[in-house]
Amino acid sequence: MASFGSKVFLSLGRTNVSGVGFRKTGNRATYATALTVNSSTNKARGGKGSTGRRPKRGPGEPRTEKMALDQDWTSVYPAATPFRANAIPLPLRMGYPVKRGIPPEKKGNLELIKIPNFLHLTPAAIRKHCEALKPFCTEWPSALDTDTKCDEHFPVKIQSTDYVSAGPSIRNPSARVVHMKVRLSCLNLDDHAQKKMLKLVGDRYCKDSDILTITTESCPLRQQNYDHAMYLLTVLYHESWKIEPWEAEKTRADMEEYSWEDSTSQKNILDTLLRINLAGEGEEAEVREQLLGREEVLEYKDSVETLKNEEPSERNMLRYKEAVRKVLKV
Amino acid sequence: MLGSSQCSCWLQKPKHLSRLSRIQLPKYGVSEGNKRKQPVNAGLASRTASRSRTRSPIFSGDFNRPSAVGTVANTATANRTVYSSVYSIFKDNKPDTLFQKVVVLVKAHDRAVLDSYEFFATMAAKELGITMGKVFEPPKDIERLTLLKSVHIYKKHRVQYEMRTHYRSIELLHVTGCTAQVYLEYIQRNLPEGVAMEVTKTTMEKIPDHILEPMWKDHPIDDKSSK
Image (cartoon, rainbow over all chains, first blue to last red; front, side, top):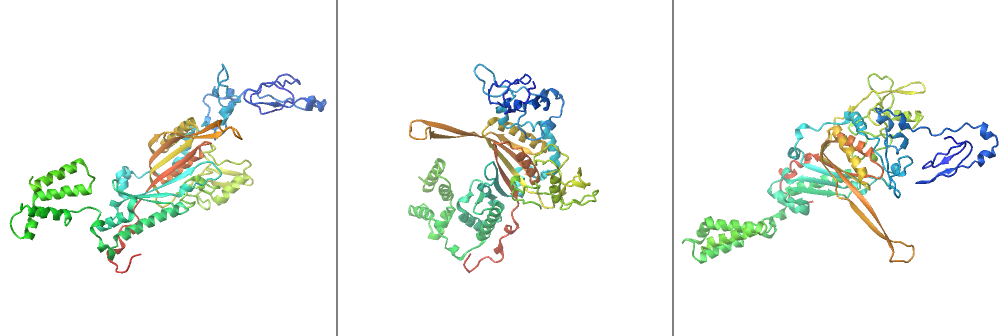
């Protein structure tokens, strides 16, 4: 109830002090302390205290009593505000209970004030906000509903990250990194250009998914990194189409794939067949050509190529064994 | 286009105006019915100066007053400014960026806060008509420190602290640039205290024109050295 001239600083967890002009300083501190200004200041003013000052009103009943059931909650909590116990008509309790007790009530509860609340983002509020934001949104083009269509028309993918956090600075140095992913099949490359591109690019190409990834982070701004990535792609493309004079010196060891024609394997098998006289009679060159056309020799060629180009597996080895057996007629 | 299109996080934009990049705010508030021309940028500043109380830029429930969105025709009377809620939304002719995927990863120390935030974000996406991909919770990270308990000696007595970081990931598919900007700005303005966010955007683009055909097609081999 009303008490003359008592000031309470930190009005958390205080009990109501009743009595006219008579002050109890026995405030029970449960979670926080409260201070009262003692009456000496009042008495020092003499009789003025009782006549000059208006009686100070108490807090009165909490606002929750006056709230209608169908009120507009979005106007009670329109923005992010700390928890106000007398403005929220819910019987909340929060905190660790003291011995043989229950969690403390919401009035003066610091735990409820500390935690961020979402009272300003009730479904009704979200709906209102989105209604107001709708005019500024655009629709996704309906022709691009599947991922394959998107890849077909827009093959270049740019990936970048933004960071939002609280701290001494809002900048984050990792925000300038740009990853650019392209499918090589979408670029206009012929055979030689493709091979040269793969050699130029090295590790950045993933064979299984046919995606070339260019990551740029050397420039200080994201726009600059994006431009740099585009520049790199352009340079790679045009350089891979160029045919340099020294490329004619490409040896067998530089080849990306193993080819059986004119290899030592071919020479060996033909020599072996001629030696054991499995071939027909005739000129050597003609005989060699005839041998190459034979079915077992072709099968042998296939098995050797799979062994060299693909990863060695049980199946490939067995196939090679069968082919050798057939060729040598063992 | 006003504002810089590169910084997609609203925090990096100039503080006095939050501009949605595809929406042009006219330099001078011209709309049919309002003869009195007022420069919008100056108008905003004068508006905030003339009002007695300061207005927070956060959504404060006045949805008819587009302080951060659109333009408002400002009819100024002698000492007071009266607003009429006439919207003028201007559209650019530039093509909108297309995001194949926007992944929003939120990090916090409290799981309950992230639960509520996830509800808010998913509902907002649904209301704005954005298709959602996966919404899941990556496993939490706990960083532990072991420090000496005492200031001097007593090596055998230590104290251990830990910091728990909980995550929540929301994936949005097939979003246009305008919609993404609106949604992300809304989400980020309502980010609670102590929560951090990382937004990873994957943009789709066509192959640039200068890569469609090789330069040397008509002049194949150079005898001079390259570079």
